[in-house]
Image (cartoon, rainbow, N blue to C red; front, side, top):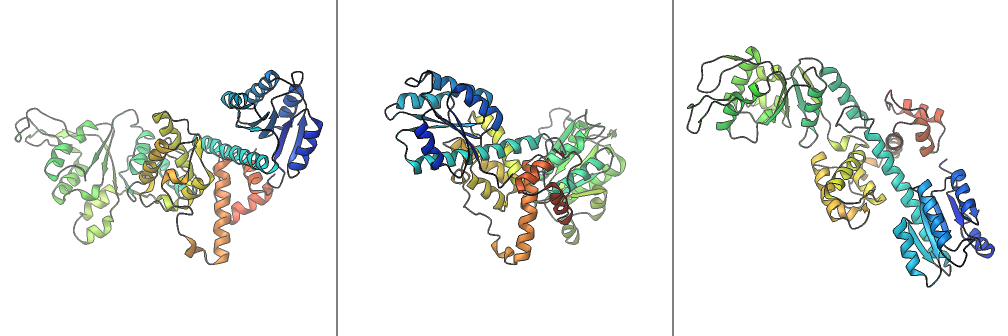
Length: 460
């Protein structure tokens, strides 16, 4: 439970040193072992996150062979356990060797109580941080849509909409700020549809000059214009049987909007410079970060086209409104980028985790990915820190919103519950344990805060 003492296993055969360490760590749940067999038995029984182990153990108290054997056995049975090896004053070589074998750290005698307590405290903190990172990794396998990482109620709602609309033929409009993952959701629509085995074609209407966009969409015949040296299919034809994703539809020129509307009505393509009418079976998914209704009012976007492309409209919330998603997405990006760059990085420091949660992310997921990619490259240790991310401590500046104490408590409670559910992978027993409450109390809080729990959530 949250209020239990941290469990510490001390492997030491000297009764005098055992007594001193018992006094030193009176705030811990202590378990002592005098040899390898006792240490492994205690490890299996109590599962301590941290082990403080002397290298000189019987039957070889003057040597290190038994100590190294014990270290290797502990790490084999419990690879995530943090082992701090205690060595003699002049035994730095074996201390370094123990770290090379997998020990978390080493400490050389004589005992300095304050230094040793700090070392053990840091080991517990690091173990807890790694546990959280591993839990976040497990969450990825329980995501509602393949490729879409979401734990917040806001995004879970979006995923349910996508699941409903995907099997249909409805033209879908995805609205959201730049970097919110519109193309990812467009691919999810395609992958969940009967067209999944056909082609998914994407085109960014804002990235192609107006003079070329029409030929890119509709194709052209040989000799239709200067440079047209061969007959070329357009995106509509290439996506035949599949899905065409028109990104940044709000940037499409008015003249081309009229031709797109005609295609949506007739499902017929005529290449530039040609007269052949080519029937095309394609599903259209559109996206934009612009306010199309305001553009209609200013006559920059056709109203009739708007109604054609928005049979189903999905409003994607920005990352700052997706409570708890930033940390989970960040962990996924970190793991992928660490593999790509060949870096042995395990996760984020506690300060970096807090900054990830509180920063408003004006550039949304695209900004998050860029910062983490740079941080993975620049990080010097095994954990990405707040300086590596380039984020200020306590980033976000939401204090003014939380001056109302009742509102602040409500938000903090809701945030804590959502994070516990994310870290526990939806396991209600584990979530209640992390929160330090009973499971019935958690049920009451879920109902009170209107927090939805996925149907696949485990009861423990």
